[in-house]
Length: 252
Image (tube, rainbow, N blue to C red; front, side):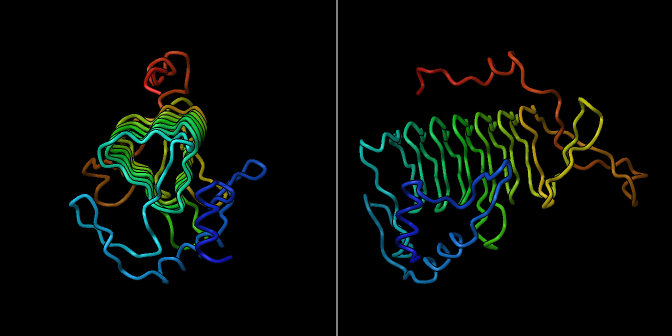
């Protein structure tokens, strides 16, 4: 399938870079490969508008929307690249950015200064708070993108990178950083959270995660009392948590 066809089908949600099959996330590497071909085929073009200078590949213009798309993009500098899917009732606060290959499902809010990187998969009714970064994973083509499942809350200044999976209904407090190699400690049971079968960091469904640390277990730093960053699950979501992260319906 050629890049332009892949791009159109990504924008309508007919295809997506990753999808959940029998409870496990699966990467559609062929879609990533088509996107990479789009980059390769493009030539640098002047895309300046409104007195601002922009230069990008001619195969990768910004997406345009109509009222019929029912996507709320508040004025103030937000952009969506071609090949990204935004479902009806998605909200983008300014300025924010959604890159090619990303999938953002219905009812999700992308707050100011937030990034949804290339191929990131965002579920329904997710709140991506101000300045949060959902990193892009376009290469290698078989690598899992960053994934945030339905009803999750991503606090301000969080960073989710390199194929991390944030489970359904999970809550990340402000400043939590997650990469595929991040070790997550579950303080409710006193043990570390196992990785996925492919070795990726996974935040369990409903987990409430804050920034923490753990002491080095070996090497010179151990004797000096050096600690390293470790996200900590302090509890699992309950009624009080729901009340604290609920987005007022009036904002939608």
